[in-house]
Image (cartoon, rainbow, N blue to C red; front, side, top):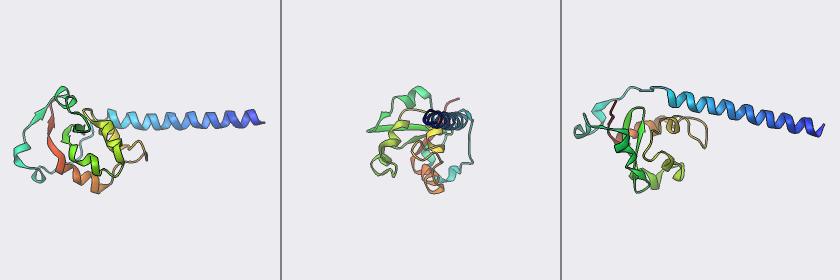
Length: 128
């Protein structure tokens, strides 16, 4: 009986991991591009584009750029005050779309307020 309970627990954990993995990867593979109001960003950033290699050069907590939904953000100044703590640094220098829309610590997307704050960090678009 004890072995059956352990087997059921292990099976349940594996199913949960598979479901979370599927949810994580399906979000990251989407070409997710929510509406974006360019009037909320400085005009000096409009039209700027960055390659993935340019973004990857900014991969430390002291210089952190990330890609979210094909847009590039410099979130360096957000790191010390990020409500989720240092977990934000997992996205430094990378495509952090999946991390933003499926927070690893909670398994759900960021709030509407956090999404709205992205405008403050916008520096350009990802080169296609």
